[in-house]
Image (cartoon, rainbow, N blue to C red; front, side, top):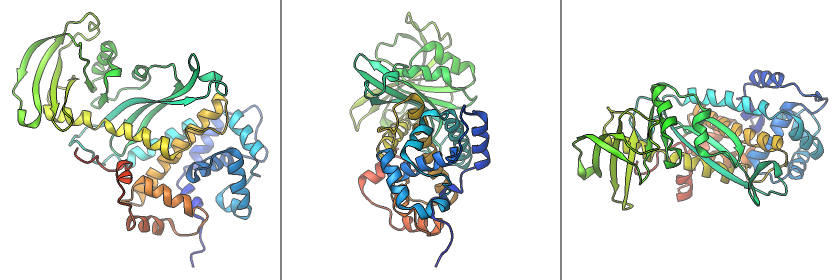
Length: 392
């Protein structure tokens, strides 16, 4: 019989603890922890994410029921609801933000060679934001509308592996387009966006950074055609034009743009895209935009399978700490999936892990068993963020 570590401890072995300690030292607290460390807090919150706990009392009850195993989980302090609540309230959320960012860097290196729906040598990012609605009575700091509160996740998703390369958490009042002011554009990379990100001055900033964008045009776009390239109408293409903008609000983009029109016969919809890339085939431009759907799946997935809609604390610091730890757990499982070369979906992996955290099965055997028992339900296919969307 295997007498090694518990599954939870094997998972946490993949955390770079030296990096975690540096993050803690970067933001020293007013009251240093005496018996319940920052790592204890992180492990308890990670346990809550992996096992779908609903409240601090739920976390306390479950972990105390396994009191003899807590040391082997890596938890050295005494688990108490009040202690965990105090830690979430007082300990700087930036510790967990910086640690999640470090995990993201590791994951992106692992998935750098991953293929996605488009045969493209460059890195491609899908940009979007998602709103999590809250109770205004409980979260007054996140005032959104007259009678609503909300936080918003502004995200740039690396389409190779569907790893969030950048995440910013704001209250609900920050517009989606503000994401373009927050990220540093990488020369040669593609940024794929929906119409809500149209601001030609900001798009020109991407162009000046030697990066590329693909964005869906608005219906009322005003422009003048300079030239047209031939297109294959049997592939759904309707036009491939070189244009200059003529509208009153388009002065922020002084260079010519490329306009591609595509008819989606399956859904009977006509799409018009704008891009500053002149060499890619027109059909590839449409495929790049279609791959933007991955970020919609990402938001749907984390809202359904991580604890970021019901919060264990009501302060801004507690909410942001919980979200960043949830992102860390998502990225950690992605790292493990790649390191163990398992073909199982993230959904299946989390489901099995949630039931086996206190077992001592070797992690590689556990993941191998998932490969042979992969569910065939449609929902599992839809939520498999590490596979291409069917039809792309």
